Image 1 (cartoon, helix red, strand yellow):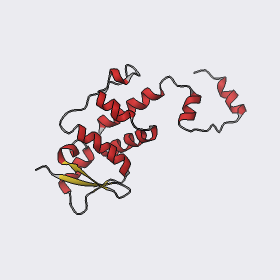
Image 2 (spheres, rainbow, N blue to C red):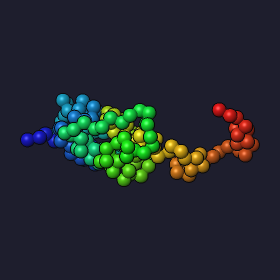
Image 3 (cartoon, one colour):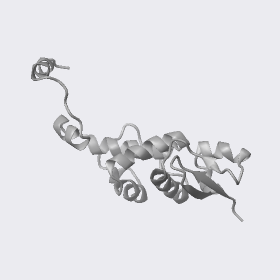
Image 4 (cartoon, one colour):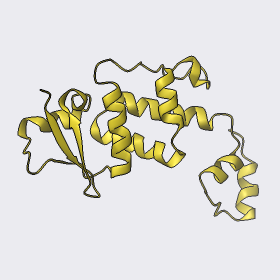
Length: 156
């Protein structure tokens, strides 16, 4: 019988994970020795929506190693360098969720998921103009027209 652990998200939602899947997370793995079933494992930095997606990834990889992602990325076409399951998993999320996954995976000590999220973001932004990026990430320019003209004169 496989052991199960209760994880408690920062919005107090309880989710279960099996011990084999949990062992993929350095943080969760470090908490197992002092696990108290009545208290669970509190995750102060991960909300329940993000945690559900992270647990999906951990459960998928409980019996196999995730593929290593080359750094730097040799191409922006992730289909050439990443497993099909990983592409389907990450591409179904909106960009904000991908950032939440990266942050949550970093907190939980899941480097392969951090790498997947970063590779996706990198391929997503590569080749886009500054104006496209401002629109995608809803960034407003707070520089005056004079400041913009001044910076346009610089060449890096």
